[in-house]
Length: 191
Image (cartoon, rainbow, N blue to C red; front, side):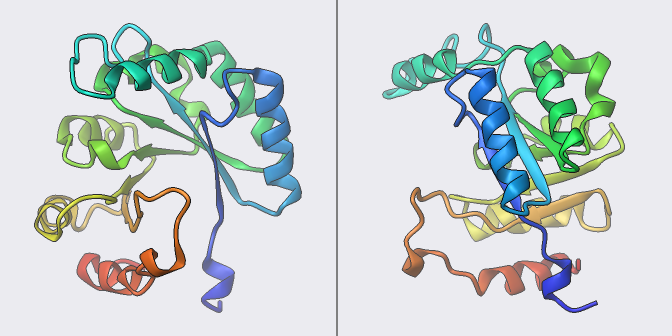
């Protein structure tokens, strides 16, 4: 198998649907049409997301999360819709308790993702790994020391996959640091 054949493309559905299930199905259709292999959603429970935080900018984020919210039943509908388009479907969680909002349907997801802000949330990572599926973990905006600690903790766990991510949107070419993928692969010892 050539290196190009082993590359998989993930379409980040995230919250790009503006909380509208119809828009989300169109995004899934677009991902399938474009030849993507996987799609990924984000889920946050509205009663927990930024509920008690008073940091600068959290009010704006909280409003955006509320505006773009889809319920667990919407997530399951859209997961099945994605599967109907022959796409693997994953979901990001930001809080351990949010996993339980979808507890009856976690088997419907093909993989889970830990977003960059939660890279050091080992409780979240461990809970997701206990579900027996692949867990992709973004390393964006973290120090090499934090990434080394993460790799050392989960090295040898075949379900855990660290990912090179750049927390800069839109990504500028000079900021992509694409060679870091090889460095991370060698550090991890993975494929």
